[in-house]
Length: 244
Image (cartoon, rainbow, N blue to C red; front, side):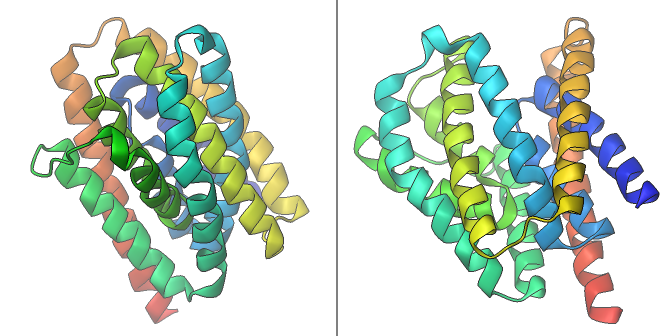
C-alpha cells in the first residue's frame, strides 16, 4: 500500500508538470505508468476522479473564454462515447486494455511528432468527440484527439485551455459513471485518487514555474519524451501481464 501511494505521488507530480509544460499527454502517461505497477482497471479508476477535479479547476480559472458552441457539440459525442468506452473497458480482458493503451500512446507519439494530422470540420465535432470519449475511457488517450479537434477549430492559448478543460471534465464524468456501474471504485482506489489529485495540483504549480523559463522547443521535446516513456511502460506492463 505504501509503495503504491509513493508511485502515485511521484507519477502525479510528473504528470502534472508534463501537462502544464507540454499541454498534452499527462493523463495518458499517468495511466500507462500506473498500469505497469498495478493493472489497467485500477489505473483507470484512480485517474478518472483526479482528472475530473483537475479539469474543473483549470476550467473555472479561465471559464469566461470558453468556446461554448464547440463545447456543446463535442460533449454531445464525448459523454456517451466515454460512458460506452468505460463499459467496454469493464468487459474486455486486461490484455486488450493494455493494447488500447499502447495504441493510444503510439498515436499520440506520432501526432506529437507531426507525422499524423487530423482534419477537423464543424460538422465532425460530435463524431470526433465520441471517438475521443471512447479512447479516453479505455486508454486515457483522448486528450490528444481533443487537442486535434480544438486546434483544428482555431482555438489557441486561454480559449484552448478553457474549452479543453470543460470537455475533459465532461468526459471524466462519463468515465466515472461507467466505472461505477461495474464497481471499479473501492476505498483503496478512491484514497489513491485523493492523493493523486493533490500530487497533480502540486505538479501543475511546479510546471507553471518551470515553464516561465523554458523555450517552446524544450516543451515539445518533453512531450515527445513522455509519450515514448508511456509506450515503453504500456509495453512492459502487457509483457509482465502475460508472464506472471
